[in-house]
Amino acid sequence: MSRPIGDLAHIAHAELLTPTPDESLHFFVELFGMEVEAREGQSVFLRGFGDYGRYSLKLTEARLPGLGHVAIRAWDEASLERRVAAIETTGLGEGWIEGDIGHGPAYRFTDPDGHRFEIFYEQERYEPPAHLRPALKNVPQRFTGRGAAVKRLDHVNLLTVDVAANRRFAETHLGYRLFERIERDDGSEAGAWLSLSIAAHELIYVADAHAVGGRLHHLAFWVDTREELLRAADLLL
Image (cartoon, rainbow, N blue to C red; front, side):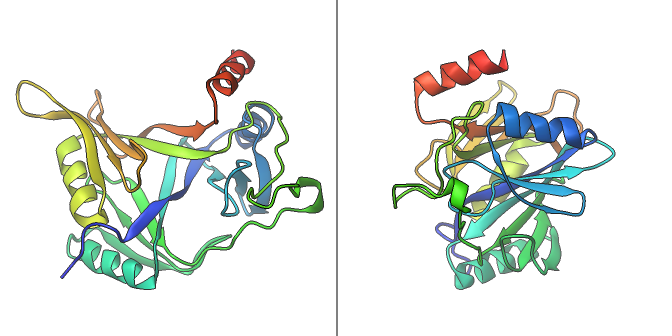
């Protein structure tokens, strides 16, 4: 029997596709203040100063911009196996991959709208190089203060043709809890805000006005205080 709540912990990273890799890398390093953790092929792996895993953003060169995938970490191996079994009953599973930089084997699938996801358990803990080693033992990396100095990935907002179908999939098969939704007068849903943790939202589905499936609305990154947010806004403006 599939246990719907408690198997998955949080979104570990997201992959963003870009046709302008140099400009995109400059944006995330110099303006967002992220650190380059690794490079492989056409991809660069980036982290905020508060990420305990090696990275939270995979930036990949592609012909068109968009979302590559969203990766979610399971609590343990048994939890991963339960979620895989549940997803396979939907016909949306794509199968296992060996893994990627920083994590072990992952199971690939799509939601009903065609957004690609991965779930995995094994993950490498970040080990900072000497110039980023913090003085405090309870933080993973030294704070550099470059650009907006984002701390971590906060949430992923996805555009979808059918909010309700994707919400039900996330609740039933991934164990997401619904925190808020918008229902129109005709009974259709315009948005759903879901989370695996105590955060108010981690995964969001909003109706695509153009009814195009599988698109990304935005990725959001966290800063700790109102003052840091105002500073970031000033820099980006």
